[in-house]
Length: 248
Image (cartoon, rainbow, N blue to C red):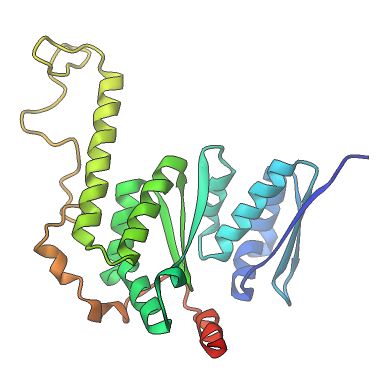
């Protein structure tokens, strides 16, 4: 008899329909993809994952966990790829009370979601701000960079400084990619393409000119703390925050 592996977790009840999907399609897709059995208790929010492959069961748990923290199943299923990972950051570790938690969550989201989108674009990751957590999905090295950026914002770093840090990282990565592809380098150090011509236009920055990604120190002043409490965010449930306040 083959050994069976099992993982269990409890997810918010409002996320159960998302996990199951229309006519059970999302749950079925995950079960078939990883060859596991997923048992969902819709009343309590308990999820049991069973399978003969320990890694597959662990991966399925990560997908379920991602869905439970506000991710669209399409993004959560990226975790079935070998080089993708999920990182969850607890906002409450950076806040002393509910008011601070809401404000700090707003710092990550930014006005009309701009902060979250900018970090996603600069790190090629997907970010979900849900309840008391910030979830990040992407390739391992990109998740590490996004986590560093989110934690910096939660620690009150300016948006401009965080974006500049990420822009610098992206420029360095693109330069490395260019060096890898273009091994033919002239005597004066100019990279050449397959035709022998320079691969970069004079003065060209190896990064997008999208103004949303270029934020100066002066522009950072527009991120007023007073805007944060009214910011939109993924996941409208604050019951878990309220419950914690009742305990204190």
